[in-house]
Image (cartoon, rainbow over all chains, first blue to last red; front, top):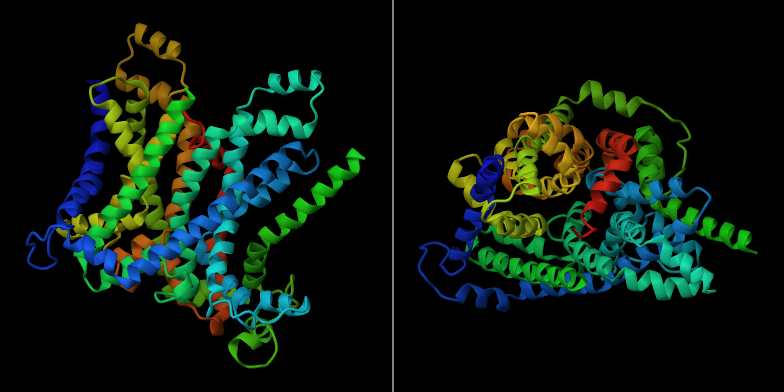
Length: 274
Length: 282
């Protein structure tokens, strides 16, 4: 009984600000925008047939397919090497973690100076004998997103991996060393297999964090960026301005289903471990 | 041999670390540079000269002038700074007032429906804003609080992320202590206040730091729910400053960066624990 008393104030807020309105959105996804007439799956069809939606969904998919494996692998390498390092370990860890705390808006000018076609990165490219890359006005804009995402999340994922690494009992390593196993063998035979659950968790969390890269995209390029960095959140914002609530409702439900499916997979992975 | 390999790895990591910190250093130097120096360095970007933009790691003529100008003569900026601070602090207080008891409940009590509620909290924590944007808009509209600070604060107060983090830490409070308090006749509420909160303090600090950084950095929510410019937080105001006003822009960015960096430096250990709390399964 007491448990419910402690929970109730927060739960009521959650019901009022998230659960009930989401249920309302599910209902609206089957209704017309203006007259609230029942239209079945028409909104969903309209969403799938919408060219902007396909482009945004494609970009989002391409973005996650490139970024997440890259981020997960890089941060693992970083976590493992940092763990073996004796010199300056804490200092380096702090340096990698700083971007987590840096508000996106406070480095927006820096990003603009770096990625302008006459900017600092192109200065470096020219010095190395390359040609100027039109970062913001060509397909290269996509890589501005990739770089922003990696920059922001590398330290975050590194901490997640370190937590996973800390969970492996040291006795296993000691036993393996006694049996004459080298560093590399320890890594492939002990470290990697023991990190399987962490891998699932970190992949899912990285995927969910990838939605936040919209911030950087919007800050450097505004509401209508180059089409290679046009993401679902841009599209929803634009639909929002046009008051196409019927479409946003259907798209939000689809989006929620994808996230739900991922959480379900994660849960299965956790349960399988036990 | 091993020593050399170690040194080599250290050097590679140090270079990478410098690269990662570079944008932050860049923003800091920008904040201490005079408008003329910025204009000179950025001439190629502003269209005043051919060639490429330039940057010096340390300003040639470091000055506090843009910062002073910002603090003394830009009332508009002050309003935004205050908006950001007000929004972030009110969210923080709300998250603690509602979240702490909820986390205590989910961590220490057994009641019907608890499993399903925990599952719902976890799912909501992981939902991106683009899913919750329309639902939140509809309810804020029904309540008539769109275009006020409350529109940004209220949904964030009931974010389930703080509950999830604090719950993890409350769970590690030893049952024996609670049992002893019960035998001494302490009520449930007293146990929560006198034992739960002090022993779960690290979790509360973790949640507070992560929560504050999140709301200080908030962009999508105010962008969608607040139309009136004088109500905007700094995070929406900064992108409006163009590079031709770089002195003001970098100074304003620095003022936004400083609270976040101070929090990071003083609470890094808690920040790490808070991040890790999501990765280790129960």
